[in-house]
Length: 522
Image (cartoon, rainbow, N blue to C red; front, side, top):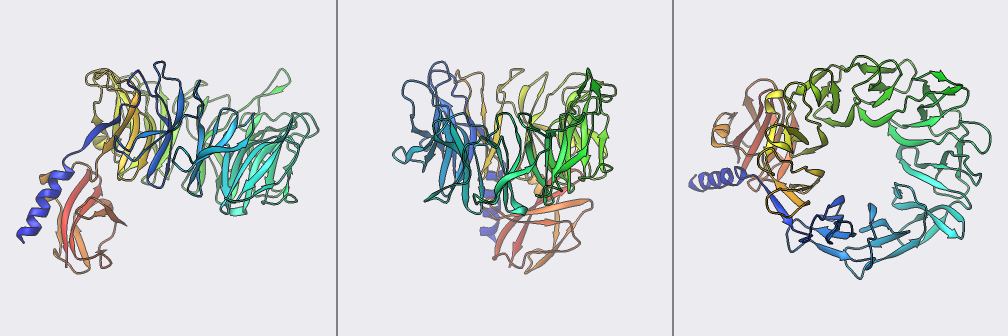
């Protein structure tokens, strides 16, 4: 028993110690501006600068330690190679630098030219059936679609441009935009990984030299939504495809306005899957840019809510799904730009008026980390800093004031790797500029009082247990090292028969926030 109590005391000490720390001062001369984070094999790859002007971007890597954070390779010793579009495939990182495609195994010697090309469009890569797809030049003025299995390259098309590569997994295809060798005739194309199976899917605009410019491909329930210009008075609107020509159709002409003989655009954007439907933003000309939902049919495509009445619109952005609700940033006529929450029944409410009154907190960078929703927001007292929430007003709080006082640390590029949340920020005090930081919070700052407040019985247990409390949403179970072992949805009885004997800590998510209790598995 003494050993169990000692372990509990040690655990409480560990989980009560949450911190934000500088990973490394990458650029002692100024800002390193790290961004483009991509994880592979427990290493985070990104681009950063280490010159005085903060614009000589090269490929870097970190394992979360200062010594494990270093330049992979200086691909352009006289200027910036500006690596972008980092993509992990087959234990290597692929990316665009300068006018070509490169690959890296994380070492200097293993960072080499992959294929020479130019005039590329993000995303540069996608993956299907353990093969890498990309577009490149294969002769002067000649471009095409290629795939690579890690050893050999296969050419799938010749003589035409390829843009906006996207995986259509349920149909086992790649969807993209191409001109088919006819200048400006941009339409939706498909490929099943063979040359004969690479073809135009539909001619939505009609005729040559003008195209629908299909893009923003996004798969939901076996179909792909996208935007395109249509013929006969249809501007950029919402379309859908089931992978067949006949099944590639306009979903709804959201903005049917014709002005000066030209069709207006609703410009659908911010595609997000929630509640088995597509949620997005669009402008119908009457209500401005607002939140919309679609099930793929005309009747099932409707505005969710008019948050900012009138033609101005609330301009929603940063749509993110967390704990069975949709969160986003939007303007409100009396609250300013704040965080809003949409339930599965399409009820939309303000999560919290962070910048009180009509001021704006301008929330962004939503991400889930360790059971909470993290994001960046600003208030008059603390400036722009890191915030978190479990989905309730009372549990939406500032995490830490990195740039103390009203100054802004401006956290950005929030990325989770392992038990850490990484981001770029400026502490405003040390003179280090915009650098790489990490936030370590294994079990969310649990206190002794919180441990006592959760009643778990029977305890110890050999298999099942109950929790004394109401309005429980879910549980998360951690070992004594802070490693999450399993998640359980709300129930009358919980089963941990599959866990080894030992001490575990249970995070209980309920209406009042998060509480943690201890259980002994015999």
